[in-house]
Length: 256
View 1: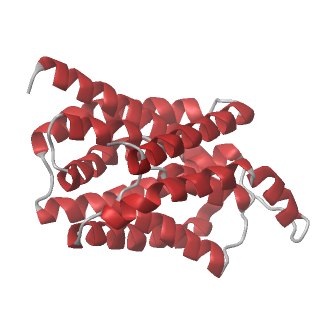
View 2: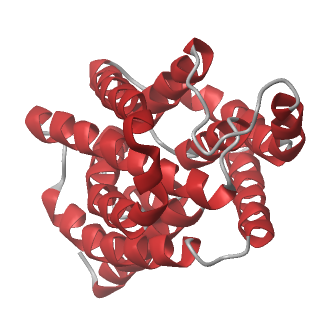
Protein backbone atom coordinates (compact mmCIF):
# COMPACT_ATOMS: atom_id res chain seq x y z
CA UNK A 1 0.00 0.00 0.00
CA UNK A 2 1.34 3.41 -1.01
CA UNK A 3 1.77 6.44 1.25
CA UNK A 4 -1.04 8.11 -0.70
CA UNK A 5 -3.40 5.19 0.02
CA UNK A 6 -2.54 5.37 3.72
CA UNK A 7 -3.20 9.12 3.78
CA UNK A 8 -6.54 8.60 2.02
CA UNK A 9 -7.62 6.02 4.61
CA UNK A 10 -6.58 8.17 7.58
CA UNK A 11 -8.42 11.21 6.22
CA UNK A 12 -11.49 9.14 5.32
CA UNK A 13 -11.52 7.61 8.80
CA UNK A 14 -11.36 11.00 10.52
CA UNK A 15 -14.12 12.40 8.31
CA UNK A 16 -16.26 9.29 8.84
CA UNK A 17 -15.88 9.32 12.62
CA UNK A 18 -16.61 13.02 12.85
CA UNK A 19 -19.61 12.95 10.53
CA UNK A 20 -21.14 9.93 12.27
CA UNK A 21 -20.86 11.74 15.60
CA UNK A 22 -22.38 14.95 14.23
CA UNK A 23 -25.03 13.94 11.72
CA UNK A 24 -24.46 10.45 10.34
CA UNK A 25 -23.19 9.61 6.88
CA UNK A 26 -19.63 8.68 7.81
CA UNK A 27 -19.78 5.56 5.68
CA UNK A 28 -19.99 7.85 2.66
CA UNK A 29 -16.32 8.67 3.30
CA UNK A 30 -14.82 5.46 4.66
CA UNK A 31 -16.54 2.76 2.60
CA UNK A 32 -15.60 4.24 -0.82
CA UNK A 33 -12.04 4.77 0.43
CA UNK A 34 -11.73 1.10 1.38
CA UNK A 35 -13.07 0.11 -2.03
CA UNK A 36 -10.61 2.51 -3.69
CA UNK A 37 -7.60 0.78 -2.12
CA UNK A 38 -8.71 -2.58 -3.51
CA UNK A 39 -10.90 -4.37 -0.96
CA UNK A 40 -13.89 -6.45 -2.21
CA UNK A 41 -17.28 -4.86 -1.38
CA UNK A 42 -18.37 -7.14 1.48
CA UNK A 43 -14.89 -7.12 3.03
CA UNK A 44 -14.80 -3.32 2.70
CA UNK A 45 -18.21 -3.08 4.34
CA UNK A 46 -17.26 -5.34 7.25
CA UNK A 47 -13.92 -3.59 7.72
CA UNK A 48 -15.65 -0.22 7.63
CA UNK A 49 -18.12 -1.23 10.36
CA UNK A 50 -15.32 -2.47 12.62
CA UNK A 51 -13.24 0.67 11.97
CA UNK A 52 -16.11 2.95 13.00
CA UNK A 53 -16.80 1.00 16.19
CA UNK A 54 -14.30 2.87 18.46
CA UNK A 55 -15.48 6.17 16.98
CA UNK A 56 -19.05 5.35 17.96
CA UNK A 57 -17.95 4.51 21.51
CA UNK A 58 -16.00 7.77 21.76
CA UNK A 59 -18.95 9.81 20.48
CA UNK A 60 -21.35 8.10 22.90
CA UNK A 61 -19.02 8.82 25.82
CA UNK A 62 -18.67 12.47 24.79
CA UNK A 63 -22.46 12.92 24.92
CA UNK A 64 -23.11 10.97 28.13
CA UNK A 65 -24.28 14.03 30.09
CA UNK A 66 -27.33 14.41 27.84
CA UNK A 67 -28.38 10.81 28.49
CA UNK A 68 -28.10 10.56 32.28
CA UNK A 69 -31.67 11.83 32.96
CA UNK A 70 -33.24 9.17 30.71
CA UNK A 71 -32.57 6.17 32.96
CA UNK A 72 -34.75 3.10 32.19
CA UNK A 73 -36.01 4.73 28.98
CA UNK A 74 -32.72 3.66 27.36
CA UNK A 75 -33.09 -0.09 28.00
CA UNK A 76 -35.59 -0.92 25.19
CA UNK A 77 -33.51 1.14 22.76
CA UNK A 78 -30.35 -0.74 23.71
CA UNK A 79 -32.10 -4.10 23.24
CA UNK A 80 -33.47 -2.97 19.85
CA UNK A 81 -29.99 -1.88 18.76
CA UNK A 82 -28.43 -5.16 19.92
CA UNK A 83 -30.96 -7.45 18.22
CA UNK A 84 -31.24 -5.39 15.05
CA UNK A 85 -27.49 -4.93 14.65
CA UNK A 86 -26.92 -8.68 15.03
CA UNK A 87 -29.59 -9.55 12.48
CA UNK A 88 -28.29 -6.99 10.00
CA UNK A 89 -24.73 -8.30 10.26
CA UNK A 90 -25.91 -11.88 9.74
CA UNK A 91 -27.95 -10.84 6.69
CA UNK A 92 -24.88 -9.21 5.16
CA UNK A 93 -22.82 -12.36 5.64
CA UNK A 94 -25.60 -14.63 4.39
CA UNK A 95 -25.86 -13.15 0.91
CA UNK A 96 -24.99 -10.39 -1.55
CA UNK A 97 -26.08 -6.81 -1.25
CA UNK A 98 -27.33 -6.15 -4.80
CA UNK A 99 -31.03 -5.80 -3.89
CA UNK A 100 -30.30 -3.73 -0.82
CA UNK A 101 -27.93 -1.48 -2.76
CA UNK A 102 -30.83 -0.63 -5.05
CA UNK A 103 -32.93 0.43 -2.06
CA UNK A 104 -30.27 2.66 -0.47
CA UNK A 105 -31.00 5.91 -2.39
CA UNK A 106 -34.73 5.59 -1.70
CA UNK A 107 -34.16 4.94 2.00
CA UNK A 108 -31.86 7.95 2.25
CA UNK A 109 -34.35 10.14 0.39
CA UNK A 110 -37.14 9.14 2.78
CA UNK A 111 -34.92 9.62 5.86
CA UNK A 112 -33.72 13.07 4.80
CA UNK A 113 -37.25 14.23 3.99
CA UNK A 114 -38.50 12.85 7.31
CA UNK A 115 -35.81 14.63 9.29
CA UNK A 116 -36.40 17.91 7.45
CA UNK A 117 -40.11 17.66 8.34
CA UNK A 118 -39.50 16.57 11.94
CA UNK A 119 -40.15 20.03 13.55
CA UNK A 120 -43.66 20.12 12.08
CA UNK A 121 -44.27 16.45 12.86
CA UNK A 122 -43.09 16.95 16.43
CA UNK A 123 -45.53 19.80 16.95
CA UNK A 124 -48.34 17.70 15.55
CA UNK A 125 -47.49 14.86 17.93
CA UNK A 126 -47.15 17.26 20.86
CA UNK A 127 -50.71 18.43 20.29
CA UNK A 128 -51.91 14.88 20.95
CA UNK A 129 -49.81 14.13 24.02
CA UNK A 130 -48.07 16.13 26.74
CA UNK A 131 -44.45 16.87 25.95
CA UNK A 132 -41.96 15.34 28.34
CA UNK A 133 -38.21 15.00 28.65
CA UNK A 134 -38.67 11.25 28.42
CA UNK A 135 -41.14 10.46 25.59
CA UNK A 136 -42.87 7.08 26.03
CA UNK A 137 -42.00 4.18 23.78
CA UNK A 138 -44.63 2.71 21.50
CA UNK A 139 -44.66 -0.53 19.53
CA UNK A 140 -44.33 1.46 16.32
CA UNK A 141 -41.33 3.49 17.54
CA UNK A 142 -39.52 0.42 18.85
CA UNK A 143 -40.19 -1.44 15.59
CA UNK A 144 -38.75 1.54 13.71
CA UNK A 145 -35.62 1.47 15.88
CA UNK A 146 -35.20 -2.27 15.27
CA UNK A 147 -35.53 -1.65 11.52
CA UNK A 148 -32.92 1.10 11.59
CA UNK A 149 -30.61 -1.16 13.62
CA UNK A 150 -30.95 -3.96 11.06
CA UNK A 151 -30.06 -1.49 8.35
CA UNK A 152 -27.09 -0.29 10.40
CA UNK A 153 -25.77 -3.80 10.93
CA UNK A 154 -26.18 -4.59 7.24
CA UNK A 155 -24.65 -1.48 5.64
CA UNK A 156 -25.04 1.63 7.78
CA UNK A 157 -24.82 4.51 5.30
CA UNK A 158 -27.39 7.04 6.48
CA UNK A 159 -28.14 5.14 9.69
CA UNK A 160 -27.44 8.25 11.76
CA UNK A 161 -29.89 10.32 9.71
CA UNK A 162 -32.61 7.69 10.18
CA UNK A 163 -31.96 7.64 13.93
CA UNK A 164 -31.98 11.43 14.23
CA UNK A 165 -35.26 11.55 12.34
CA UNK A 166 -36.84 8.97 14.65
CA UNK A 167 -35.63 10.58 17.88
CA UNK A 168 -36.56 14.08 16.76
CA UNK A 169 -40.10 13.03 15.84
CA UNK A 170 -40.43 11.34 19.25
CA UNK A 171 -39.99 14.78 20.81
CA UNK A 172 -36.32 14.92 21.86
CA UNK A 173 -34.28 18.07 21.45
CA UNK A 174 -31.74 17.88 18.67
CA UNK A 175 -28.79 17.75 21.10
CA UNK A 176 -30.32 14.81 23.00
CA UNK A 177 -31.41 13.10 19.78
CA UNK A 178 -27.80 13.33 18.63
CA UNK A 179 -26.53 11.80 21.90
CA UNK A 180 -29.10 8.99 21.67
CA UNK A 181 -28.09 8.35 18.08
CA UNK A 182 -24.44 8.03 19.12
CA UNK A 183 -25.27 5.63 21.95
CA UNK A 184 -27.43 3.28 19.85
CA UNK A 185 -24.92 3.43 16.99
CA UNK A 186 -22.25 2.26 19.44
CA UNK A 187 -24.41 -0.75 20.35
CA UNK A 188 -25.08 -1.60 16.69
CA UNK A 189 -21.42 -1.29 15.71
CA UNK A 190 -20.38 -3.37 18.72
CA UNK A 191 -22.54 -6.36 17.83
CA UNK A 192 -21.79 -6.03 14.10
CA UNK A 193 -18.06 -5.90 14.89
CA UNK A 194 -18.26 -9.15 16.87
CA UNK A 195 -20.20 -10.79 14.02
CA UNK A 196 -17.75 -9.77 11.30
CA UNK A 197 -14.64 -10.63 13.32
CA UNK A 198 -15.96 -14.10 14.19
CA UNK A 199 -16.83 -14.65 10.52
CA UNK A 200 -13.29 -13.66 9.43
CA UNK A 201 -14.47 -10.95 7.02
CA UNK A 202 -12.26 -8.10 8.29
CA UNK A 203 -9.10 -6.85 6.56
CA UNK A 204 -6.95 -5.94 9.55
CA UNK A 205 -4.24 -3.84 7.88
CA UNK A 206 -6.67 -1.36 6.31
CA UNK A 207 -8.74 -1.49 9.48
CA UNK A 208 -5.84 -0.30 11.65
CA UNK A 209 -5.27 2.72 9.42
CA UNK A 210 -8.92 3.81 9.21
CA UNK A 211 -9.46 3.14 12.92
CA UNK A 212 -6.89 5.74 13.99
CA UNK A 213 -8.56 8.52 12.04
CA UNK A 214 -12.11 7.38 12.90
CA UNK A 215 -11.50 7.32 16.65
CA UNK A 216 -10.08 10.85 16.68
CA UNK A 217 -12.83 12.10 14.39
CA UNK A 218 -15.57 10.44 16.47
CA UNK A 219 -14.49 12.11 19.68
CA UNK A 220 -14.02 15.49 18.01
CA UNK A 221 -17.44 15.26 16.39
CA UNK A 222 -19.11 14.12 19.61
CA UNK A 223 -17.73 17.09 21.53
CA UNK A 224 -18.62 19.55 18.78
CA UNK A 225 -22.17 18.17 18.58
CA UNK A 226 -22.83 19.27 22.18
CA UNK A 227 -22.09 22.91 21.35
CA UNK A 228 -23.43 23.47 17.83
CA UNK A 229 -26.57 25.59 17.55
CA UNK A 230 -29.60 23.37 16.81
CA UNK A 231 -30.41 25.18 13.57
CA UNK A 232 -26.85 24.76 12.34
CA UNK A 233 -26.78 21.06 13.20
CA UNK A 234 -30.17 20.54 11.55
CA UNK A 235 -28.94 22.27 8.39
CA UNK A 236 -25.82 20.09 8.45
CA UNK A 237 -27.91 16.91 8.78
CA UNK A 238 -30.13 17.89 5.85
CA UNK A 239 -27.10 18.83 3.73
CA UNK A 240 -25.40 15.50 4.44
CA UNK A 241 -28.59 13.57 3.74
CA UNK A 242 -29.21 15.41 0.47
CA UNK A 243 -25.62 14.87 -0.67
CA UNK A 244 -25.70 11.17 0.16
CA UNK A 245 -29.06 10.73 -1.56
CA UNK A 246 -27.81 12.40 -4.72
CA UNK A 247 -24.62 10.38 -4.74
CA UNK A 248 -26.33 7.02 -4.28
CA UNK A 249 -28.97 7.78 -6.93
CA UNK A 250 -26.14 8.61 -9.33
CA UNK A 251 -24.11 5.53 -8.37
CA UNK A 252 -27.13 3.22 -8.63
CA UNK A 253 -28.81 4.46 -11.79
CA UNK A 254 -26.34 6.54 -13.81
CA UNK A 255 -22.75 5.44 -13.11
CA UNK A 256 -21.34 3.11 -15.74
